Length: 509
Image 1 (cartoon, rainbow, N blue to C red):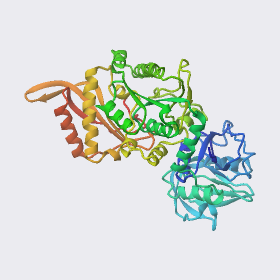
Image 2: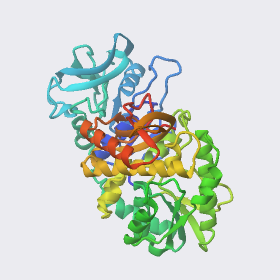
Image 3: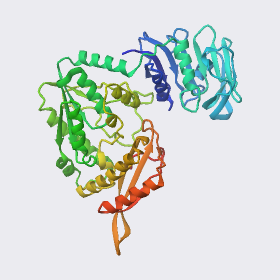
Image 4: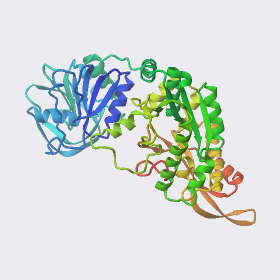
């Protein structure tokens, strides 16, 4: 695996964004906690220090060891990273009179400064700090200012070391990508070789060497990650890849048959297992969301273990783990506090004696899609909305019954088909319907009804970490609502969820 750029994480909410902006320049980068700097820095051609929720003046602030980096490898400190270097090498960092959050404009840029090449004064940048660099050390040179921040950027003389007090990785910094390109390509001379084609060639070669003639089992979900992982493995080992696609009875309408058909058209060695009865029996009478998740996760492991035991001499289990999952597991503060159990099975039970292979573990979601496109995967498969591992179980609030599943499948199909028909599907990151544990009074004909309420949900997002509700056309919502109420027996009211994440989550359970 090529190295190229090392990003040291000090706990900033924006660290993953830095990595994604670097990757968009076709440059490979890795995120490591500030206190776990790789022993071998050979191959890293540049280092970026992230922001942090800490003040560098706080006694408990992160203390990175830069002895192998500063002055030896091109270095860019972002926000906290810039303040840390100024503070620790003879400058003064103090609390700002006004908290500097939000948009600002560069009021001064030093002439002929490589970091700001092709960036003009008044360029908008994004500030997010309560401290500010008041004075810089003697061998530091100020190279940019804003109206409120004198030392918005600096360079250390005699080194390719820079600090900026704004965030180039966020879209609000209009020339942020240009600044990162200036630092990485023009100053650090990092090669722009991280392309989908290069990733496919490299990964297929690595998989061949790692797996050899052994057999690999992969649980397919119909989602983008498992589909791309399966295709990479198929290119590497062919028929030695055994895919298992489990129907838990909680998929979308007709999804089991349609996805199974798509996979077989791709030439994958896929076995479909209809375990609907097993899952539905296990879920009977259970309303608690966490218990539902655990039952579904445990039932999946049992079904998967039964099926994998039929594959003789299987050595590896393939998983569709992607880079945000890896970053989460090694973050500065450890895994985030649990809001809810992860939708998908994490890790392997002890009784499954298989080695794990994760071909996508260094990719972000958007990169997974680009790699899939490079391999010629059907755009309809790559463009599929994310769908939770527990399926409709966490979109049916309360206990699960076959009748509730039928109702929600019908509602969901009308909604999703409508989005496709109105050419709205690809403008939405994720959409679905929720069946609420509410009976609503209604009138149909001359009779009162007491039937179910459904909520429609459509959000736009990049990675699901934050999301905004989509302002769907009123005439579209009106038509879909009428179709649902007229066609789906058991529903007499439709509402539309206009909550963003945060504070709400995308799913309701």
